[in-house]
Length: 411
Ligand SMILES: C[S@@+](CC[C@H](N)C(=O)[O-])C[C@H]1O[C@@H](n2cnc3c(N)ncnc32)[C@H](O)[C@@H]1O
Image (cartoon, rainbow, N blue to C red; front, top):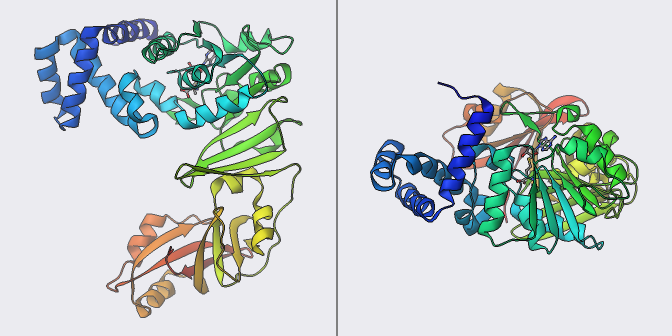
């Protein structure tokens, strides 16, 4: 029988507490071994029931599976932390949380309200950076996870608070919220397992985001990378961060830590590259396709700073609405990936296939921008017997559906 949400949460809290005991830790470690040995779920659960008891078996298996997933971003520390599937799905990357915490605290703040703590990723980063943290969440499972995770890491300057962030921010005064002189707000941007695109429907909603930025100068808010620039209040720095070529987060920095208008941050192989502009640099100029095509990093595109890199590379846009740049030479810049263009033709599947066959191309990577095509499907359709490979870019050039055939990326 289905449980009521409150009962379900109380049961999850009870299970998490049982896993934080020495018996629970032993059950978790055994579940981790079975998982590492690729034991199937049915066998693993029956072994666990026999070895650690029915009460601990299910929760230990569930958390071990979440730890396994968490290892990609939490590293070895994942093995000391507890997660539910829901909390892990909402968790940011610890390395980025550390970076945010360090920047927030450079202004001299000593205490931080983590407004919506979930499994405690930001709370742990802030406490590790030396702040006193008030971790707030209205979800009892999130509060328990934060309590247990900070305790597991020996982080003691943490108070966990059951409160509604909307009310706390409404009551913020004199630059303080929840008794702290700074704040991190990371609204829940998913509901029913789906991304919530409308900021007014985030939890807490956009009105709480702007109220916090207005009332607490030493604040940072994590927002969706797709946030419309028009939403960013005046005097607030917006930063877009990509890791390994994928956009992972966007941040709004409060008036105290704000240093510029927009910032693009690229993290790759542990190195961090930043680009800033104090005012809108405007769009890059548009001109016909030349010998090289440059695919900008998503943080560069979203931050609205593409024209800065275009000017540096002597590059132009292929279309006013499309984020591809073109120039006469390969770009020596980490902000773009460059491809040598061998052919530019109107989009026509039959002609494209014939051209690739004639060139001996058998393997194709398809990229697209401004086109409804499905890259995997087109790549399958273009596969042939040839031994060569090519990058096929389907896009719009001067408004027309166009294909650029490029040499594969080298170096
Ligand atoms: C995106 S998660 C935070 C993730 C966290 N920063 C991390 O990286 O692990 C948002 C959290 O805010 C909490 N939350 C949403 N609305 C809230 C509200 N009005 N008051 C208190 N907590 C809220 C949710 O329960 C959820 O745990």
